[in-house]
Image: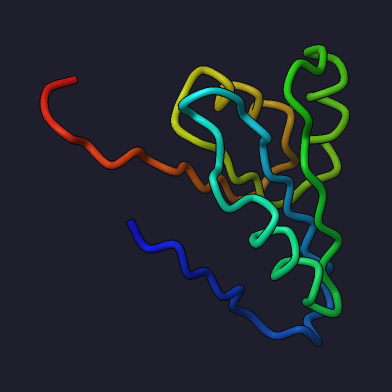
Amino acid sequence: MNRNWTPVGDSNASVARRPLLLMAGGRRKIANLGTLLSACRAQASWHCAALPVGVSLLQAAAALSRANIFVSPHGADMVNAFAMPAGAAVIEIMPEHRGAC
């Protein structure tokens, strides 16, 4: 799995990017979440946030309604994308498969 991530896009874009990364726990956690948040926050017009583990559905929906990019590990939490505004992007991180599922 490639652990190097570089945000792309024009930092002078008229629409602010508002990525929200899901802080999943256990085996679904994003191992380099701190690095991703640092790289994201280094972008001038980006407003990056992380959704903590264990928030209620209402809290998740409120946070996602303000996000226009959702980054999450594969899993049931992806259903929360329903609360995102029209035209938002969803990035699903798939695990490296090592044998049968």
